[in-house]
Image (cartoon, rainbow, N blue to C red; front, top):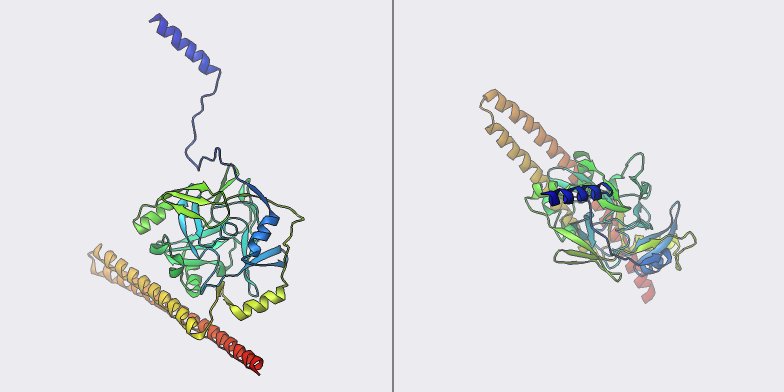
Length: 386
C-alpha cells in the first residue's frame, strides 16, 4: 500500500511540472510530412499560355482568358463537387484546372467573357453558395472581394454580380456530369432571390476551408450519405485524379513576384475579335457553336431544363398543399390553405412565363449572331475562291 502511495505521489509531482495536451476537435486534415514544391508566378504564366491568352486588364494587371470550346461554359461548371477535409472541393475536368479553380479569382466582362486573375493562396474552391430546400447555387468570388489568409474574407459587403451565379436542382448537385444539369441563366436570376447566401471561407493554420454549404443539408435533401475524400498531394501538374477515397491534386506553393509577367501578351482588341467570331458571350455564359443546327440543339436543352424546373416547382407546391390539407379537419381552414397555395402557384407560374420569354429573347439574339457569322464566313470563302 505504501509503494502505491509513493508511486501516485511521484506521478502527481511529475504531472504538475508539465502540460498534458488534449487534442482539439478535428478541424481539418493532418498535413504533417507533406512537402509541396514552390513555383514562381512565371511558371504559372508559361503553363497557362498553352491553354489560353494573357492580356492586360486594368485594374487587375495581366489576366488569363481560357480557350474553352464548350457549348455552355463558365467557371466551376465543367467538373464536379466532392467533400474533403477542406470542405467542398472542385474537381475540374481540364488539365489546367488545378490552377485557376484553386488559386486567384475569376472576373467577368462583356468583351472578354470570363478571365482569371492570378493569386497565390490555395483553396478547395473560391466560391460562395446559395441554398434552398430544392436548389443549390454557387458563384466564383470576384477579384473585388478581398481575402486575407490570416482572418478570411474581409470585404465590407459581399456583393456578387447576378450573372456569376449558377444553379442546379439539389438532386443533381453530386452528379459527376454536373454541366448537363446547370439551369439557364434566366432561371438562376430568379433563384438568387429565393435562396439564402452561405458565404463561409474559414482559415485554420493558414489553410483555407470551404464549408459554407453544410454537408448535412445536402445529405438530408438527397437522402444520401456523402463520402468524405482524403486530399492527397500529386507530384506533377495536370488533371486531378480521384481514386477510391482519395483526391490527388497538384497543390504547389506559388511565390508572387511584382516583376513577373507573361512572355506572350496578346492585344486585347485581337482577343475581342477572336471571341466574337468563335463564341457567344452573354449573361455570364460562353457558348462555342459552329452552326445554326448545333446552336438549336443547345437551345432545346436549355428550354427543356427550364421547363422541367418549372414543372417540378409546381409539383412541390401541390404536394405541400395536400400535406397541409390533411393536417386540418376544419373546412374553413382547408379553404384558407387552398387559397394561399393557389396564390403561390399563380405567382410561380407567372415567374416561369417571364423566365421563358427572357430565355427565348436571348436565344433569338444568339441565333442572329450565329447566322451573321456563317454568312460572313461564306462571303470570305467566295472572295478567296475568286
